[in-house]
Length: 104
Image (cartoon, rainbow, N blue to C red; front, side, top):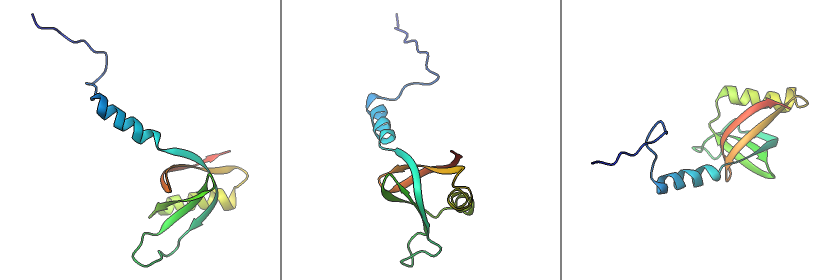
């Protein structure tokens, strides 16, 4: 008689090693609120990525090749509505992996 393994998960669980690697990768992402910004209008040195820099948790962090919508939203948060908006940043070391402009 074969043993049946019942599960309530919607799909089979990955191995413990795979789940641990995913946890470690997710745990290394940190977040904070940007207090300054710097937008490179022209990449320097030539050939490098043009970047949006945000000063978060006392360190400059960068997002390479930001789209126009991101640039406008961040600028609005810092220049037009700094009393109402802020920029939340998710980062790994000095690289921005996510950001959102939100109300304070």
